[in-house]
Structures are given as structure tokens and as C-alpha cells.
Length: 114
Image 1 (cartoon, rainbow, N blue to C red):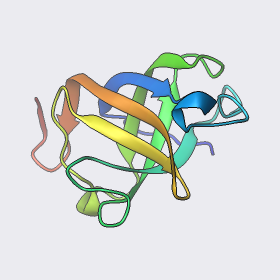
Image 2: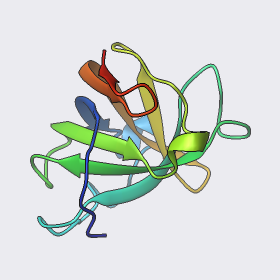
Image 3: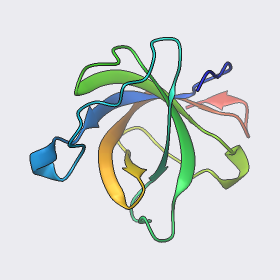
């Protein structure tokens, strides 16, 4: 998916390996000029009550652990995140990755960097 615009959530994305219950086909093959589209939630919410669409832009599209930027597809329904939070990335009912939020977060609703 090709998307332009701000990706205000910065952090480290770690794909779960097959022995951790993650992807059996390896890191998703996303063309370098596109972003990965998925769903995710922020605990204590879970897959049954907290899913929201998320877009992820990665520095390396082949690495199991990589610096990444993300944004919720619909801001009004997006979970609030703070540095240190973990966004659990899902594909269907399966947990595929964890995005640990770093220090650079831009809150669109308030127009401030936190």
C-alpha cells in the first residue's frame, strides 16, 4: 500500500518467529516504496476489543527487527500510545509482531510533540 503523510509513532518493530507463534512465511514482503497495512491493539485491550487499522513504514523490509514508523489509519478511533508502550500487530487472529513505541510521538489532536 502506498501512503503519503505523517507517521507519528516511532519505535522498534520485532516480527515474531514461527517458534513464537508468529509468521511461518518470514517477514512480510512489502515493496520498498510501500508500507505494511495491518491491525493492532495496545494492551490492556486485546484482539477481541481493541483492534484498529495501522500502517507501518520500515527502514528494512527484510529484517526481523527494525526501526519503524507507524500511524493509525483512523485517528478518531486510535488507541493512545506513550513511549514504552507496545502495539501488538495482528494478521487475522494471529499475533505477528510487537512495535515498541519510542520517544517521538506527535499527537495530531493536540498539535504537540510528546
